[in-house]
Image 1 (cartoon, helix red, strand yellow):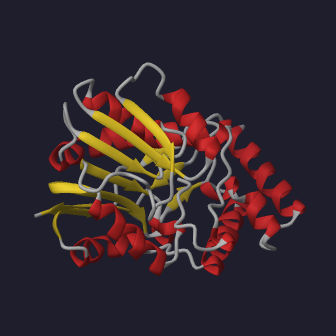
Image 2: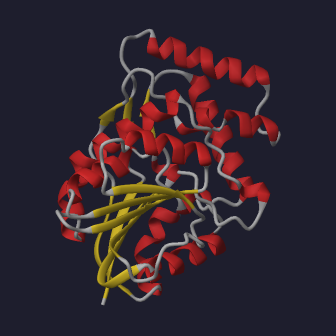
Image 3: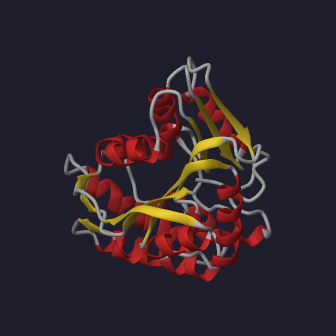
Length: 273
């Protein structure tokens, strides 16, 4: 999800959008609907609700939100990447009550106190801690009294995949080093409850972990989408990328993707009282 605070060029979002990445986003949206549906409803996502997704990327989750709130509701997506906005607009064709716009996480341009639910997924981990604090303060200010801020983020070290490819482990190690060198808050999932409370919200749900999932064929790890940024910043070489791609090809030749153990997926929502 490309929505940085915009305070520095060296911390721009690193996962490049592509048809391959869109497939990963759509898979993530499907699994989120299946595993988080009850929490979405408890947070206020229902027919007639006004919801905004901050860092909507190519719109896979936003499409699901638009379906839930229906024509009597409003679904808005915000992202800093013009390509992501364009892709999300295509994803939302036929949903006249949904809209996507360019904006920054801490300067969205949205009217204060205008949404029942503000959703922010996998944005904070791609920002430094101080940027994340500014983002959250801004998002809380967009909530109506009684509205919920719904956060999904990661403790990245806790993710596991079932494969036998050392080169894919190597990709993950390079990716983590790359993100940490940028100052990305890769363990922010463990802080979500404290962050909600620090912004005056009453925490209603906070969970970590989720059901084991099998990656569909063609869906690759997030580090693969960051390969160009890693190479540009000295954390990968062309030969690294060749090795990693070959490992993915070998894995895909087995006819199924690896199992994904989302132990580090953390979800929390807090209500403005």
